[in-house]
Image (cartoon, rainbow, N blue to C red; front, side, top):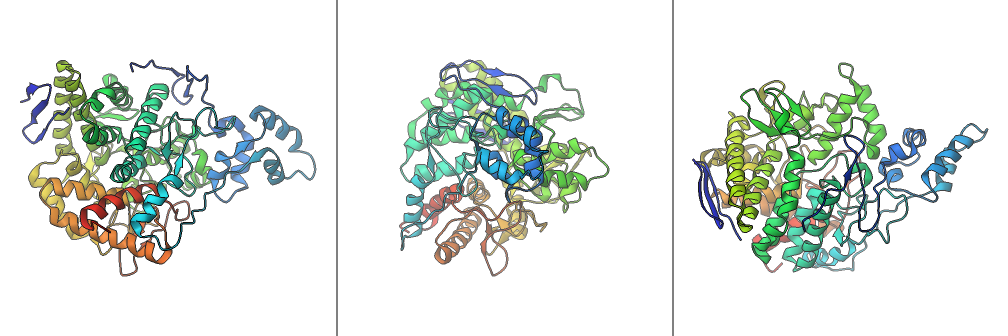
Length: 549
């Protein structure tokens, strides 16, 4: 079934898909396991601290429960003025003293972060504004300049943050930011961010959700292989070989425990179905409220009477790993956050990304002339493609998620249906049917709506998101629907232009339904300006559909 042609190519991984192969040994420094993840950087001596919830204990709970800051992320990003242990000791000494003010105490011992206010020069075109934004959103936070005891994890090179309350780098955001940076001729920043992620894989064992201590217990959609591919397009096949050790480590992270599974079981990010098919799910090491959304998670768990709170917390955290936090995709009733069951769901986007990771490892092994590895990962990708088309195809005419605990597909169409097209794992006739479904139910005046449910969650209707538009455009073009890709791309561009022309900014998400398109809403925090991935995708779409503007 699989024919290995040479180290430059691997064809016919299954009869349904093809790909063409193109053209630092690092030690594990992981210390600890399960929820107590920690690492040390042997070169700099930096040691990762526990997350603020562990570092400050009951002080943390008091601050978040009493809502000292309107945004729960503020306290976990705050910098302590003295050693955390001394702060905790002072708290225990003072908390019972008459007249004690928690707000005053926190102000005395912590420096809160500030959101950067972006004030662009007047009369910039959209393209000029994006080019102006790159340095405004670029950070360098090495071990030399990260404040002591901060939750921020240092990285060796520059990186781009999304903007607003997101003062750190984020895993999957970075790929879409890189698209724009490369388009803008900033290959140096593309390489810097790739090196940062390779560093995180080598020191932590995976790429966290973001470079904060409270994000280490989970990752995010694994786009590292796409980042390597992006750099290779400009710099050649050597890039695949350079990052091959990190690609393989990332794969091992996502597949950890797979060899111990029995049919019908799951461990960490891996599920084995009854027929021994192995697929991936979103998961988090911890089963406690998220540090950055503590009070929200506690409130959600209190609404659930039929499940232990720790299960609810795990599912909330797993949804945060998905990047879709939150969405009807993860809800048992498609409408209510309290019915969340993320870890029971095999997501179509994650498994498409894992397919691409497997094919990319095969390419890297080809560049390294390790033909045994090429054969292994071509085979793994072939099995993954077959499994995607067996379990993640919905008879209603689209790729979708699968509830492995209930043993049935999820009847909740979403823009994630385009991931198998994006990753080249879709069967052609099913890709065409998916395109028809997209056109019939997801295409709106301002672009692509995220789902068909309006739940007030940000990853549902009527919102549309830049990364999903790029995935749609690329996936549809790959399968011969450039016409639909152009409709989606140009409509979203018009929405972005409309907001920019009226407000002189790019934002995190957009309303794409109805006549009044504009900045999106919903979720746990106000609409954020910046905005990294919108900038990147907009620049790519401008060059595709409005060159010269």
